[in-house]
Length: 592
Ligand code: NAD
Image (cartoon, rainbow, N blue to C red):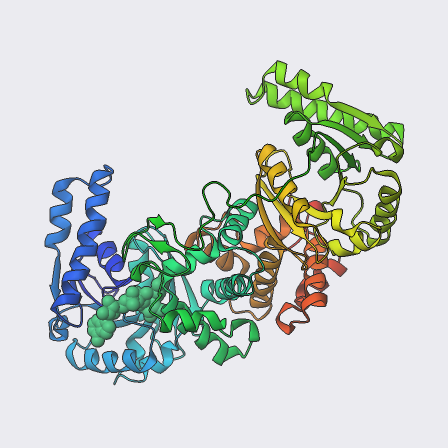
């Protein structure tokens, strides 16, 4: 018969433990909340008070229910008080020796049927279990941060965990309103195993000054719809915890991409642990606060020292595909005269029709006035001759993603365009410097990587090469602001910011599936429900197209020569078989 859980204990009331206490108490379960000493107990009590006060002020909890909730929690610094609990969840810092010690103590106090669970993110549940006299009753119960909000729990089953034990914990998770997934005991389980390579990579980008912390975070929020940027997320997780998770994952898998970026160790040693200590990658109003305050790395409110910018009034766009069409519309709507060049009159007509249709749709949805539409249309001039770009201030090319084609185009633009004109490519995977090197004016060449659909997506990656002049970067950044886009600026490395952070993670998900650690459904659920991502990796791969994803992953592998970036064989095989995702009716899933 399944166990009834009416009284549980939580050991450790830090970032996770305090939230876990709240989850149980909200679900009418009595909780013994344990910390090392009275001061830590008071801090834990304070966190619960603050969190429930907020829920009351937001109208999500009545004052009466808040009082009931608090009455269910008994705070103590004595481990002996777990004696009559049916379940104990440990949430102390991520150190194996500490967890083993606590499990040995708990084992001696609890009743014979009690379950012992660890909230570890990466340590071996098996190793923790064998520190007790009865490893069969030990499981992992891995909540996500913030525990009261995120509706996902990984239940970790070791080779000795009794079936009833993880079944009962799974049922309990469901009762708490969480979506449980049962997985084996492997460092990082599903979500962290996929998340931390990405987070570590973002830290490395910051550490190498490839892009600013604000730009790295904005890129993932605006480019992928993530709820938080990776560096803000590291601060929320806690840099000490993140370091331990990476370290454990590295030791188990020996994947260099999991070796903690050196700056993490330095920050942890200096006490910069993220939100909980008031400072991590960002600075917060006080320890535990989510409110950001300015610090030495914050961009100056007035934009700081202004680099002189070039004047951009007239723009040329080359290409006739989806990106070109969207970019033409963006410029025209912002009041720039746009000359767009395609290879034939029929293509010019098709682009004009597509822009007109898109503007018309915006009018019908009330997003654009008829006057604004007519005004935008007046800015459009179609052409079949590149020579018509002789006088424009800036050209954006969005032709075929083929280096030979792009280089030939830049040679032409170099011959045609006036001196000082800015030449931009919207390539998503080719080196911008190759386009620059095809001209005699590499200082004027830059990447302007729009996202699809360009009319909708706010983000533009502004990519400078080793040759790009600073005033060209400043001009394009200002131009993006005038277009009502959010620009992020980075160097000319494969994948820029977004794709370099996104695709290795998607590739890792394919490798996890290939290794039969979890199903595609479980992995998608983990990333959506546990990490709040808008789509799971397999959903996203099927939307993007497996061929496109494979091509990007190959570029990343070629550029960085990281073993961990090598495309997953399963991805290669699916592409070879013609399973390209939604567009072909089958990818990781089959579509009607
Ligand atoms: P934390 O540092 O915020 O809190 C740990 C708490 O444990 C501290 O308050 C500390 O005083 C207390 N503690 C230490 N020794 C103790 C003892 N002997 N008895 C009682 N309490 C003791 O850490 P955290 O981020 O909450 O992480 C706790 C666990 O949860 C770790 O295993 C971590 O990997 C895991 N986890 C963390 C996250 C996250 O996002 N931070 C998410 C899921 C799981």
